[in-house]
Image (cartoon, rainbow over all chains, first blue to last red; front, side, top):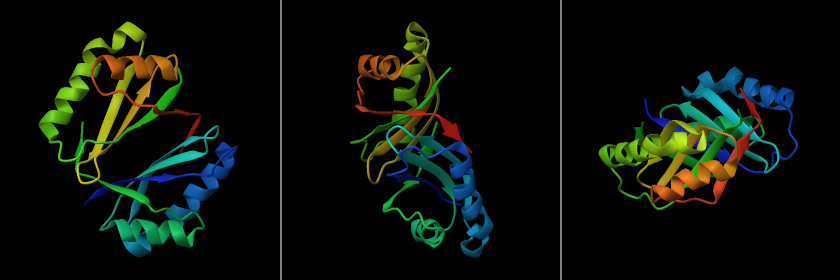
Length: 82
Length: 82
């Protein structure tokens, strides 16, 4: 199953609780697309969020994020990890 | 110890072996700055690399990457992870 890293902007000042809620919303429906969100990292100073996931395609990852209200065009397929 | 996610551009077509060499070069000198690079993810199609590290500061992370020949200005301090 391909892995993906996606990047979100605009999460300035978001708290751990809020990030947890956003992540939980993704987890609640990810199965509809065969996606799994493994991890999310937040820098509330810059507003960047990085999400690591696995799934069938970039578009499947994007559809889950769109439905939960945090769409992104920045999805990268991870071919190599070390 | 703070955690950081940094992003590199321009790694188009880089192989697993080449990413491994770049990562090994960082690991070889990271102790000079009290940094540890935990993981690196590559999308060779777009040329994006994401590195997860821990260390005393953004600047410490940047100094290691500069010395090993892959500098970046995109370093984000991870305050929250879920």
